[in-house]
Amino acid sequence: MTRFGLGFPVGGANLIPGAATEAMVMRNLLSLFVLALALAVAMADRTRAQQLIDKGFVHGWNLMVDPAFGNGCLIQTVYEDHSVARLGFDALEKRGYFAVYNMAWGDIEVGRNYDVTFDLGGQ
Image 1 (cartoon, rainbow, N blue to C red):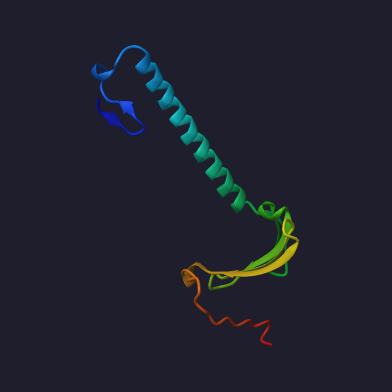
Image 2 (image 1 turned 60 degrees about the vertical axis):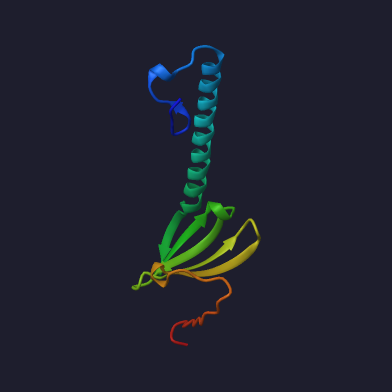
């Protein structure tokens, strides 16, 4: 029997009548259900990780809440070079964090050292 994708038979002439066909249909339905469930969970995690709740804008900084960190608060600003600086509190781990992002920087390699300079108002 020729199969395609998740094991669906191709062409009606290849179907075997009886219990074997019913078992195959049930197995295919179960496979589709598991695939749909996995996709839904993956999308829910991705959506949850991306949803910051905006609470306002003060002196160039966005005030936000991050549900992925137990509704921890953060401030964030974006610079002309598209760098994003974020200072926040992870309410799940009960700790603060400081992060700077820029897509142009590329990937960080594990085990490699990088020079980092912080310039706080020219000081």
